[in-house]
Length: 335
Image (cartoon, rainbow, N blue to C red; front, side):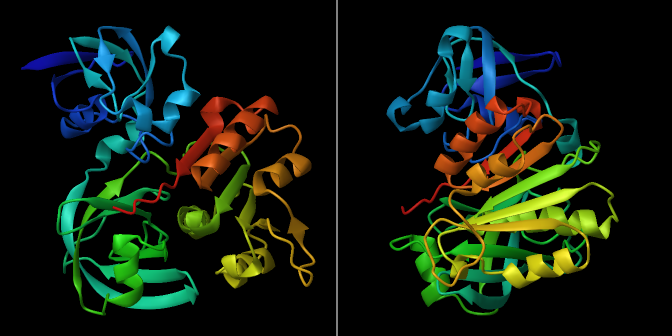
C-alpha cells in the first residue's frame, strides 16, 4: 500500500510506501528536501504537516523532537512515516536539484594521523569519475552489512577526484576501530555521495561566522578553502572549539589563512591548559561575546548535537534569523 504526498509551496507530489519515511520517499523520487544526519538528531529535515497523519516508529529515539511543536504540525521528516495521504509544507532547496547522489567504489589512497584520535583519509574515485558536490556536504561509507557511516568532505568541489575525510576514533566504533587498526592503503571501500543540505549558500553576501567543534572542522575547511579559491570578498570569522590544543589538529592551516589575510580565527579550548594563552570556554559562547548582535551574519556550525542545539537557541535569541543558521550535527554510531 502507498500514499501520496503533496508539498507546499512547490506543488510537487510523490508517492510514499507505508514502511518508509517521508524523507526517504522524497529523496528516492528526486525531491530536494533539506536534511542532515537522517537519524533524528539535527532537525535539519523539519517540515509541517498541513493535512494527513504520520507516526514515529521509534519516537523515544528522536532527539530532534524536542526542537519542534507538534501542535502546529511540525514534524521531523527523516523519522516520520505516513498513515494517510499527506500535504506537507517544506522548503525545497534549488541548489540540490543538480546534485545527484550515487554509489561508488573508492580506493584508499592515503592515511595520515593528524592526532592521537583523528585520522585523515584520502579516497580516490574510479578513473574518469568526479564527484559533483557543494562545499560542506558529506558522504556515507557503506559497510559490508549495509549499514552507513557518515563523514563530511574536507576537500573542495574543485578537488573532486580525491576525497578527504577527518575521522575521529570512537572507542567501540566498529568502523573507526577498523580505520585506526586495520585499514590499509589500496583497500577498497563503498560510498554513497554526496549527501546533506549543509552547504555554503553562495548567493548570499552576508559576512560569515563559521563554528567547528572537533572534527566538525572538516566541512568548515571545505567551505573556507572554496571561498578562498573563488576569491570571495565575504568576511569570514572561524571559531574552532576543542577540549585541548591537540584537538586543533590543523591549527597551522588556520593560522596560514590568517597570515594570508583570508579569515579571522579564534580557537577556543574547553579544558584548562596552563600553557594556553588563547580563549577558554564554550566555543558558541565566545561567538556571542564577540558578536552580541548576530542579525547581519550567516552562521554555519558543525559539531556535537548538544553544541549545535545550544548555539541555535542562543544565536537566534541574539538576532540571528533562523534562515541564516546552517548546521550539521555529528552523531556517532557504534553499531
